Length: 150
Image 1 (cartoon, rainbow, N blue to C red):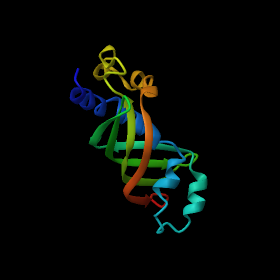
Image 2: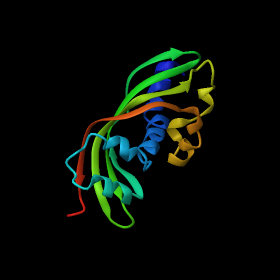
Image 3: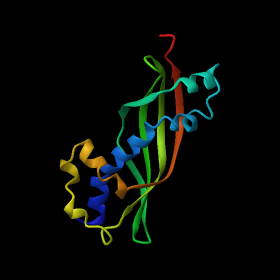
Image 4: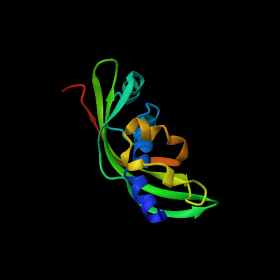
């Protein structure tokens, strides 16, 4: 497998799953909503958050990649819709783009041919998440809907 094929396969499997796992972490909500000022009681709502669930993601898009000290540094972008939950009720629905950088071992540093990424389910992919180092993760084009009143 060459580097181009590896990047394509990674973007459709492991990278997408690892980034999704990070997006669903409750502490990411604060970063996502830092510039949202139209929710009146935003701080109160944020204190109620117990869980986040991705409802939809678009393609994981590799913006560019470079070789850096035996690793591939990958700049990425991925649109998503996230549901934010309290104890039992949905609180918010966030639409945004995840943007960031991650590192994976280059083909000279890791035997990627020993892993059948395209045949793995989510659990098997995440068992290999240690191969992905999220260097940066931020959010752009963030829109937030308060669904508590629906």
